[in-house]
Length: 300
Ligand SMILES: C[S@@+](CC[C@H](N)C(=O)[O-])C[C@H]1O[C@@H](n2cnc3c(N)ncnc32)[C@H](O)[C@@H]1O
Image (tube, rainbow, N blue to C red; front, side):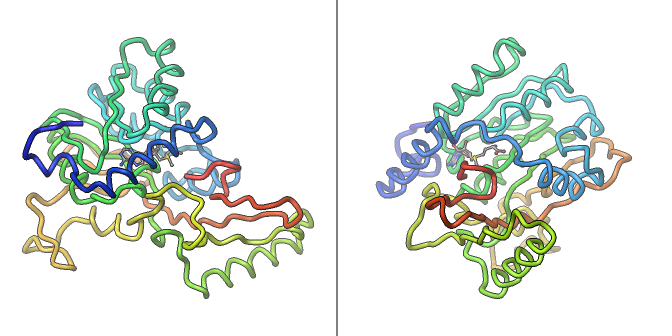
């Protein structure tokens, strides 16, 4: 992190914020939470189909269709296997990885260093205040990190200015209700769907939905903090350059959900599209409390 005196744009002086972001980093420093890769075969297949049109093809497998990349940046450290696959498929690529969690970065480094010597650099940084180099990266990727960020406009601006003219931004993330505070109707619909599924699959009969409780928060401090605004922040601005809520942009971000580009050739495959990510945690009542995001014991 930069620590320029008088530079309030790049380093918060808000003590409450600083203590919360420290807690966020410590949350992801815990070993059980590091390196979360994609969940189960069923959810993988669903997301793959939404993103690439093919149940068997993950979004990151499509990167080579967009070109040959050399200088990459990853916003968020997690998912070592995903990062490894990206490096494997893009042999000329060097990745600079930013994350606020020192341990997550160390784990990623340990997992990748032997396989991809000199191709990964890690930087501990609070992305809410990060300063990325201008016109530096031909690819920027981020998966499941943006829904932990509060300064979305700043990060979008940084991504936009740091991409080369023909660069691409790949973003995959949870973009639903902030803090997972779903409407009652939506909860009832999902509960009904669960009951219906249990008719066909008896194993589900003892399961019940557990909805995240804002008053009894078991997730990280910034979990889903502005996840309902991510798409709006990244949407191209309408003519006149002013966003729906009066948000003025210093420079309109040319970003897209999951894949965004500024001139490089378009892939011939299916359009990469955002997928809704409902967070339904289920539990078996007799086995105590187990709140989560449907990805095993990991909470993000
Ligand atoms: C849910 S994990 C993502 C894990 C992985 N990318 C995946 O696909 O499952 C969220 C990541 O965002 C990081 N993070 C949260 N807030 C951050 C911040 N303000 N700046 C940088 N990284 C942050 C956490 O340390 C963690 O590594």
